[in-house]
Length: 71
Image (cartoon, rainbow, N blue to C red; front, top):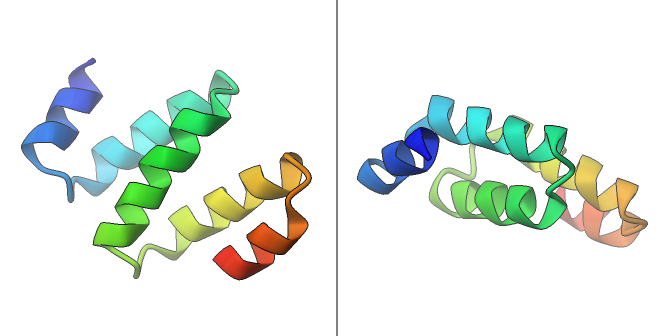
């Protein structure tokens, strides 16, 4: 909840977004992780590690073409 609050206050908080995405991935909450990282990429497309994380999740879900497009 604290990380979500931080992101509501500042959507460009890289550390909070990365930590929350990591928590979602660790809990296998793929949809939430994809949404969070996608929103982050829309704000800050220079965050290549987020694009790689999105692509990794897409590959795990059998979405290789989408993963390639993400990268």
